Image 1 (cartoon, rainbow, N blue to C red):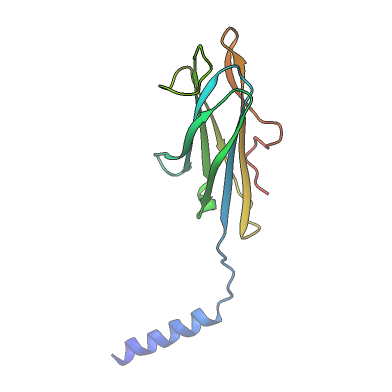
Image 2: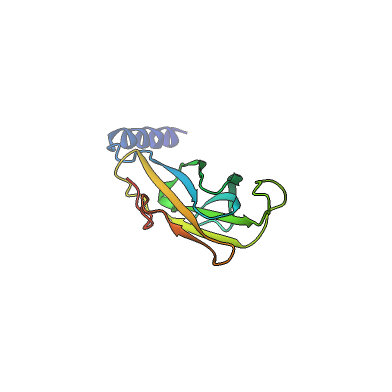
Length: 154
């Protein structure tokens, strides 16, 4: 018993003497889509860490032609594990232009892998894409120029 108490005192002294170098950090990721196509699109934002095999749905909804959507924002509590965001769009072919009904095709995705620098307690990252194209030419997702597609955070 005496030995266990001595060991506990030594551990307490060592822990008190250690410098507090570890600090908590988070990464805040915001997602945005600009629909520059001629069709309504159903958008789904997914998020995950690189070490995980599954994705979680962050937000979803309709985006009309010529409109922007910025409904996604996620806080990653473990940025060193490599936050990821996937933007998935499903183009809806509607004759009347109404953004309602069942989701359509094609199914187009873009993924962003972030590498937070770990220099501050809170880092801000952006995942931005724009949907371009038309029914006759086809649709595609491009990185939005106001965002850094390399996955850097500031």
